[in-house]
Length: 111
Image (cartoon, rainbow, N blue to C red; front, top):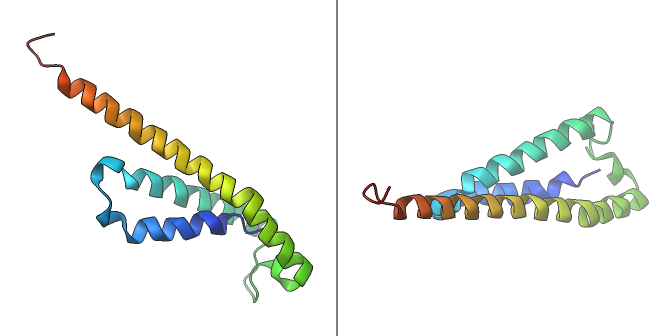
């Protein structure tokens, strides 16, 4: 229903503050991963009729029961999905930085 909104909120934050984050963290990788996931889920939710072009836009917000289910989905699916994306990004950045460190410590004389 609206699990992608959790990642979108973090994506907005990381996009706005990307210039303030050190380059070694490769925040652009995280942004691509987040916005790609948000776009894919947005298309899927539109396809299934969960997002409509009229107010309240999210069909789950049409009733109090639907809103409660939507918030539960955001907590149970959106947050773990975001944590998986952030975890994959952190692992990628760590491995990349370690490989760069290792390759820069090898001098041409020792090869």
